[in-house]
Image 1: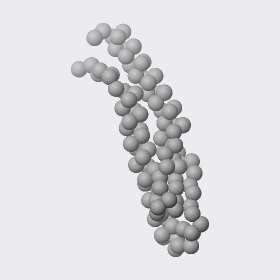
Image 2: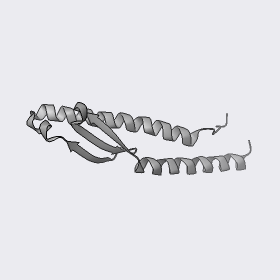
Image 3: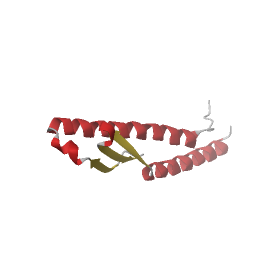
Image 4: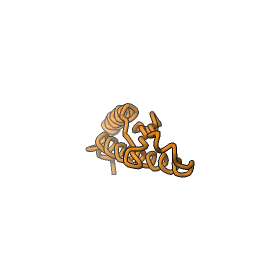
Length: 99
């Protein structure tokens, strides 16, 4: 593989990754805990967009509320991780790295 071809392939990959990152920043996943009593919205770039807590949850003690919010956050993060893996995998699919 010549250097010009390699540079073109690198530029193409860079463009695909940039587009994928832009899409991740615009895509929102929902983390849900306690049967929907807490919902965390997060982008594919891990930016927290919104948290919704059912008023009934606020009657619990602080530790329980914190656990429910943390569970929803972890669910959102797991979904964001899966989204990132899928989107970035698609962006880099078919790219042959030189040996």
